Image (cartoon, rainbow, N blue to C red):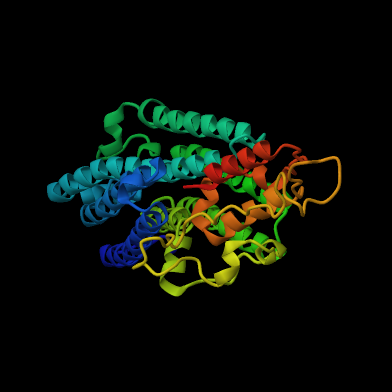
Length: 394
């Protein structure tokens, strides 16, 4: 881009392209959640946060277009004499500079809105794990970062506040926003990096098949693209401080964040549209005698016309142990009840997780890594199964 600002047409083209893709991905998220939960009335809190975030993201794109057509007080001081000689240009630049204030707030809120959605997601999947404590610390850090950025923007870096739209501007920080950009980059990139680092070790340690780990880690790793976009945004901002190059990178960074946060919820929709079975559950459990699922291993649901059919993404029915109290076939031993394999909870969790990617936020990761002790009482065993089903149910 050099030292030339992007043209209004260029900004408009990129905004339309990126927003259109974002809209499709966002609508796909909503549809996927409705498929997974069975009703639009059962959406999660982060779904509503994302709805507000997408609206603010859209507003930011509109404000960028307005700002580009009116110009701002961000200009080479050598051109002041020429611009100040034209009252129309002065008036337009003052108006455009005021628009930038709203633009910056929309960018900040949309970025932090995406972080909020991700934190809610990670908080759910790390319940009862030590990592949940780190999520809470990260949430506090994100909140503190937001407050610090807002305070420095309104009360520190540009005083008086009216200098943000002054023509000519006395303090170039009121036009270039460089100190503000540094502060925002520190909290933004660092929090994204920590948010990216927390779930990966958990997935690596989880007792899942390698292919499934690769898929899940790949989904979580989409956050890397957001970090890269944020770094490139600041790089070009400082490389061309007297241009509005940052605006085109605002479009790209905010759009990338929106894409990543919404794509992570697409799995139920993909299965509905394409019947994705690449990582469908398959283990010895599916071949055990007495398992009703053996009748149709390849199907994740029954005919929709059958009133007794199970929903496409319903939790699999619990496996009933072949040996029960009082059964003549009960093997000899000191246990009169059912003896469960120590890997049964892990296999069950893997099945629930992989066959419905939307369940990632509903399944505590401790179910992947903690092996259950042998239970000697049948009622205790059944209670454990019921508890696990409730944890895995959306």
